[in-house]
Structures are given as structure tokens and as C-alpha cells.
Length: 494
Image (tube, rainbow, N blue to C red):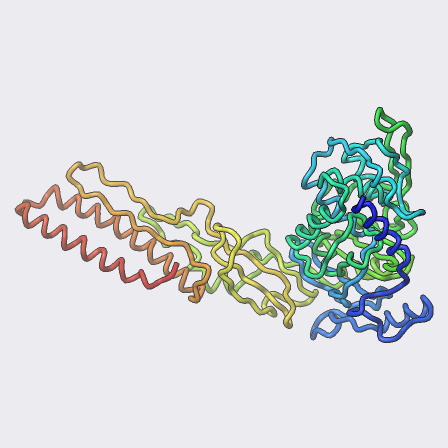
């Protein structure tokens, strides 16, 4: 009863919210009309336009807007991207993403009394009734095509096992942080008005990277018509039409669109999170606190700006400094059979994003040894006029073994070679990448020399008639000398 009372109170409080923004994002002056507010928002500073050598971005009506490259996360356009705003139904990209991560699509979602009735009158829905049920996949269709609030509630209850919204909201908040959100706090799964339910354009773009990487969610979001047939748990078929005008068939249909989700409440105004791809360049756009249909016009203007002014560079194919200057260090020396195998290589899939006409030689790069994988030796970060434009991973060769092992010669009297271990680079190492590579190459030299020494010694054992006592002393001397030479390299922190 207590939970029920608090949820009803929250709904009443939400319904009473007027058009407002957070104190931290207050407009410079109070607007008396929508037109005046939009005029003030158009005059707001576009932070990305202040960057030297950066393409000038368009003026948009949205209070907050961002355009990023989806794979690298490079920010191409920025306007108040960390200003907290109400997300409205764009919240549902987080809810549906969690549903795909935590559930099977054939799971049955049964609608509780709270899921059906804890919605303000007139809010988006598909008129589900208590006790009726849908599959999880049908729920996703209802949420993304019709923005059904009661379905979002039912999915949250199904996942969390309780009608207490805060339980699922905590799961949303935890996952949002994992995706890179910095200033987000979700209080419910559908974006109904709540003072404690807010996010930013930047955070929605980070969450969008996860959402738009899911092909099923993208396909559903572009579907014009929802058609759920009647079943044993659904007495009457549900047929709904999407109101989003940027998808195929809409007035503002954008041909390169990959996926999208709109949002609207009186307090939040209109918002849109979307993704588009053209010529291999995938962009994510977020506009918040806009007015319909300007959210579509602003989004298309930002996509046109991005596709016209930026291009991606495959670092492994275009980078000269690391591939050429350090080429001798990136490969081991030829072995005794005349072959050589690379020890390290630039990841061939990593790209950076630059304005057209700017080359990789115009960037500044720095090496970081803080890596997320044992397969990575380092990460090279790139920037242009202080803007992070991407990174490339420096990977160990797939068939590279970090410890050298040598076969002994098939002579029962021959000594056994001692393996020469190497250590992987320590992430906190202050030494340069060049030193690391030199050290790895030096160990390879030692290993090859060890094999040659073993061959010579084996040959000598068969032809030398020196007394055994002298031969044992000779062996100890050679072995001690070998380890003394090897110890010279212990100062290197590999």
C-alpha cells in the first residue's frame, strides 16, 4: 500500500510540473512564449564552433544537441551537451536495450494492475488490460513503435520481479554508467515526468551507442506499423501506427536513418535520439528541448553537416610515424631459417575521425599503456586542436607467445637449454613505447643466440676429447656468462 501511495503521489506531482528546466541549465532570460524561448536557444553558444580549424556547425533550435561518430565516440558537434534535461520517452532506449540484454525474446510478460493503471490519462499506450500478456519481442515493438508506457512498466516489472520502479531504475542507472553516462539519473522505465529523472545529450549519445549497435532494436524502431495478433493471452489484436516522422513513410523521412526514438512531455518538450549511416560513416545525433517538427529539421541539418565535413581514417593504413619510423621494432629479427614474424601491429579496424582536408600528420598522438585487454601492448590516442578524434590499439601478434621455449637437440649427453622468460608490459610503466619494443626484440635475439650456442656445444661435445672435469668447468663458465648477459636486460620493464 505504501509503494502504491508513493507511486500515485509521484504521478500527481509529475502532472503538475510546468514547463521548466533545472537550475543548472536555466535560460539567460525567462521566455514568455515558445517563439521567444526558441529564439533564445538559437542564440546559445555552440561549443564545437569555437575550435580552431573545426568545420562550423549549423544553428539549431534545440537547447542541447550533440553529433558523434558511433564507433570512436568522437564528438563532431556540441551545444550544451552536459546540460541536464528531461528525456521523456527517449528513456525507452535504455529500457529496451536492457530487455535484450537480460531476457529472451520469447519470454512471456504478464501485465499487472500497477503496470496498466499507473499512467497519467492520455499518455501513450496500447490499452493493455490486467492479466493480459505479450512476448518480450512484442513488448519491444509496442515500446519502440507506439511508445507504450504501460508496456515499459510491465517489462521493468518482469525483469526486476517487483512493481517498485526504483529497483529497475537502479539497473538502468548502473548500465548507463557502464555505457559512459556521466550526469544521468533514471527514476522510471518510460520517461514520465519526475524531478529525479534526467539525463544529458552526451549521456543519451553514449547510451545510443549501445542501442544502435543492436540490429533488432534498430529495425523495430524504423517499423511504421505494429501488428500484434490476438492470442490466448491477448483477446484482441493490437494494431498501431508510429508517429515518428523521420522514419520511412514520414514527412521528414531520412534515407540514411539506422534507428531512432522520439520523446515528448510538457516539461521536456520534444527530443530525438537517432543514428544514420552513409559511405561507411555512422553518426549518432541527439537533440533535446526542441519543438516539433524542429527536432526533425535540426537532426537532418546535423547529419548533413557531419557527412559533408568529416571522414574516417584507418590508422593502420595511413599512419606513417609508427609504421615506418618504428618498423624495425614492430617485427622480430629474422630467425635462423630466414623468416620473420611481427610481434606488434596496429589494429586494422580502429579508425579516427577528422575534418575533410585534414590529414593524420596534422594530429597529435600520445601513447598510453593503460589497456583493457591482455592482447594490447598500448593504445595510441589522437587529437586535433585539442579534440579527441579517436584511438588505435597496438596489439600483440595473435600467434606471439610471451615466453620463448626451445627444443633440445636429440643427444642424450647434450645439456638442456634453459627457457628465457619474458614479461608483458606493465601498465604503469613510465618508459617509452620505443624502449618496450627494443626490449622485446633484444629477448628475441637472446633466444636465437641460445639455439645457436646449443648447436655449437652439441657439435663440440662430439669432437672434443678434453677431460670431463675440464669440460664441466667449461660448461659452468659458458652458462654463467650467458645468464650474466641475459641479466643486463632485467632493467627493462616489459
